[in-house]
Image 1 (cartoon, rainbow, N blue to C red):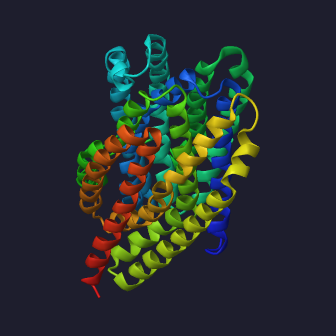
Image 2: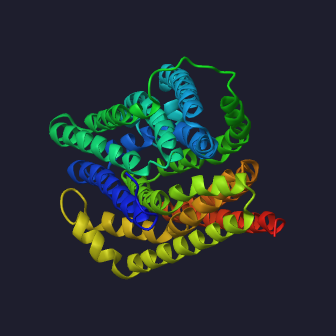
Image 3: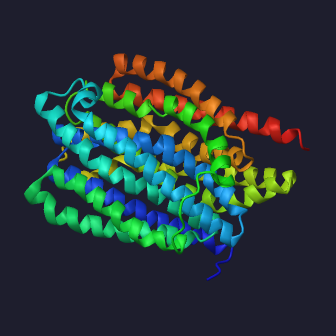
Length: 425
């Protein structure tokens, strides 16, 4: 079914919003039933390394795959999609096995501020999340496959259906079995989503590791892997530092970051994802004038939306958070802390959204090196800011350092993209 270019962003924004609300309810339910404390800290800390692996490998692959697959013919498209899918299973299967076997050794170093019970619980959370990591990585490839064929709607409906199944399991099991059920609910969500998405690949094809697209994927991917392995470790820095804060602070920082990340996800699905195949085609045809025009309009749109939403947080944030969390095991002090963390994370919201369209523009041109170099430089700056901020202001200091890092990255991306596109004018 064809959807007009005017209606498509609205539909995708709505579907992404549904997905975000489901994920938000998932975390809201955990925090209100259990309350911010050492158990939720262990759950969210346990997500760190699996999410890091996904951000480094799967996230990078998604940026590379859509432009590559978008220009493939149908038969070649399915053959190459199967190649990439099976390669992803192999890579993440090996990673998960190694991390699982060594988890009792490396996890305690991730959360030095936790007591023995907290560290043991975090190890259990990590092991469960590593199982789910394999499915989430494969789902990233499958969604990229749909997006490359401009079949955006089912790619957004599938995670919504999977989230509903996971939520049913969570609501059923959390009051009786505790936080361990929350980790397994995430695994179930990933399995169900994979079952919905895998039909896009068509009939099975044997893997061919010598394929042209596999080689092109690796050529574009390895600069990203080298850079993102470094600068995506900001999540590790956040967890290590926040584990030294009072119990529950790690959960609040994580949740605040997730709120903005969820908002950025909606904007990305609605306003960035649909134009990536178009930008790839314009770059392939060397139509740089239209390429630049699309990037400029999307950047301004995202800037207006994010600044408008942040103004609402400044004006009405207290009332909204009190309505959402003024019950259960959230107390008034925790609500106030969450509000100030959200205010301090302005850069994650504004800079993160604008940075997505700018980064995707580089990827659509086949340039993965420049965003990687910028990310490395920005992360190095952000690391120092977070350390200093935590020493002087605790959790809020980490949030401020993160904001500056995101805003500075967005500025550099805009500067270097304008310079490169200016050469074609």
